[in-house]
Image: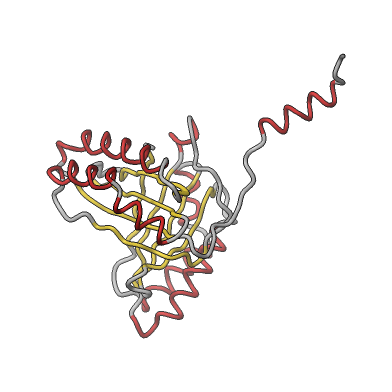
Length: 232
């Protein structure tokens, strides 16, 4: 039986359509980890991270894990994790894969393994991270925002609005604002841009410049924005 051309085209569109975006659940546990290695050991660290990420993605409750290397300072790394809930993250911490990774990484470090659990402040619909050629061009920005305690509520509202506005900027793939679990006046902003030009365009957008100006008198530290490339 011959299948009509219109049906074949429709099936093709369904087959190649991107997965439907969804929002993370309110219970989602986010983790942002920073560490630095000896410059001579960056290759070893990359290899360990890739193995760790592959194994972690197979664990129950893992939503995603991305491993990043800082642009211009290749001895600095970040791990971005999202877990179904705190219990899933706790199980991951107790897993043999995690213990083995940290044990092998330890001799390469030149500073502490800085793991920071977070909760979601403003998290948009989840889109797949760039892959293939798109990943090579994509730029991640990870920013630590520290608000003086007495201005916490004002600062939280500003960071939340920044995320909502940033998602509308040209070239944005993801723009999430997270709150550090142990210090609610400390936040982490995670952005993915299609390329460096898009990231720079956001940096000079009117709403971003206004945010930076209003944030300065409320901030407890420098605005620490760092750019990375993924090597999942």
